[in-house]
Image 1 (tube, rainbow, N blue to C red):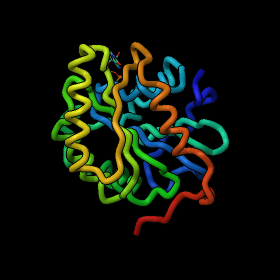
Image 2: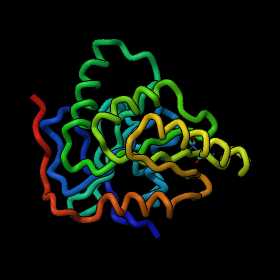
Image 3: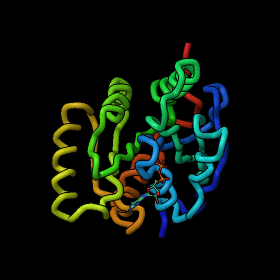
Amino acid sequence: MSRFPRAAFFKSVAALEDLPVSMGEIAFAGRSNTGKSSAINALARKRRLAFVSKTPGRTQLINFYALGEERFLVDLPGYGYAKVPAATRAPWEKLLGGYLRFRAPLRGIALVIDARHALTELDRRMLAWIRPTGRPLHVLLTKADKLSREAALKVLRHVEQELATLAPNFSVQLFSSLKKAGLDEAEAVFERWLSPKERGGSRGPSPE
Ligand code: GDP
């Protein structure tokens, strides 16, 4: 049973002013093609939920999936897909950087990484953005089914060690959307992040 059974596409956002009122949300980041959409779909037990983010015109947007009670899973634009011209990159970085830094209801970041490749240079760059925000980080080493158990555990230890030097507040696990492996562990983390806290709903402070 999904812990997010009512997940449904809510909206795509191109500007910080358009972020919805939220009581808590988890943002999914990751390189394109690592399995971020598949992971969101696996968590929601819906086959095509996160494919909204792949439709033309939405790949550079922040896509919100409502969980009910003003809580959200948030699909951040995948990075590293193609050489993005500087003119396109600037507004994208402003949107993403502003979101990660100023979004008050953002309870934590799920970083999706292909277990076969471990951390890449682009992931390290993303971690350098996340680190100063002090947000909790949970890394899903996905496509773990493509590795032997032994090789997967080796990657897990390796990434764990590297993250200890790059992120102040992290956890990491093996995951497979294909085999539905690691769902309970991930859901427990995300559910804890989304559990009600005193802080009420807000859009967060506005960037200058
Ligand atoms: P995204 O670009 O990060 O959203 O990646 P997708 O979710 O679209 O996945 C990219 C490709 O990897 C697709 O062909 C998926 O079927 C495949 N894929 C995603 N997750 C897994 C997984 O856990 N195991 C395996 N074997 N393939 C996966």
